[in-house]
Image (cartoon, rainbow, N blue to C red; front, side, top):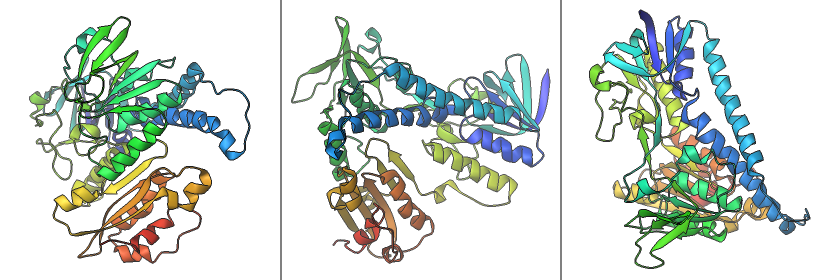
Length: 457
């Protein structure tokens, strides 16, 4: 049996359902194929569950600090991990169910559950059924990368997905990978009461950030009792009784770390290896990401790729922007491009890091002559009043054009305050324009114009 549609969307992640909404509103008959959970990574194993855990961990941390604010709660703070997990699951499942209901109730949309595999450029098999469509959109997301570390097959290990199934706090969680996912989980489980060690192969944490930002993040984590081991060039695993020994191989410090649980947070890989893309003629790079042009078309003109699987962004907001680009170009006659997108993201430790554009190191590497403004959060009234003075604010400006090249705000409200800079960069206004703004006091954002007035050199 073969069914024909105007458009087919493979994967119901962040971009797919919204695209289905636009296409059906344009009177297209659309098939949405999903093989597992609606909502993709964000709703099921990413933003929604992890930020729910961040909130629970922050509540525990603030409760322990209550006396600093003149508040007495009496007794020790305890964690009911089953209740924490139940809250997380309820919020995540509500979002998932909402996405599924939206699609199933959408006029001209047919939801098909199963594993999609190409049999030709315009033919997709789902079980015993064949589907064809004039336009095909691949939105299959990604999953945790699990490298072949020596000894890994001899021990139990967790990924960001399986870690969410824990209903008890680990005694000692060893996290391999000192970047965004690993650091968020490190602070979460430390605040839940676990001993936590972060092992990073590189010389410092979150290596894509400037060294001063990386150092400040490490200081925040270590102040909460998280152990950090960088320059771990020889990572390996071995059972040690009921525990797990993780070989570090650093020049200094103990040669291994023994923990009760191990989390692998060393990167992501796209879910493209079992789609039959070779039969469709869709090109991929050496890591399995689907190759796309600036308007997200693949090597086959009627097939597009959105979200994590195209290698052009690894965030919910970039996936959603992929949908916006495709919809605008296909339905509205526009000419939007991925290369016009200014990158922005956040690291959701507490306090968070908000980042947009180029770091200072990236700007210099691209040949810019830069001016830099910086201020520690110890000099931000809002941070002082809230009792969270960790971190710093930093803005990078092109010396020749006065264009804002990028910014980082590591501190209370940094994930929100960064949008003032992001908006100005999208509007392509000069730093002087933002410097002349009159922001509200007391906020974190009010220091951005001040910093722009103190650029050096």
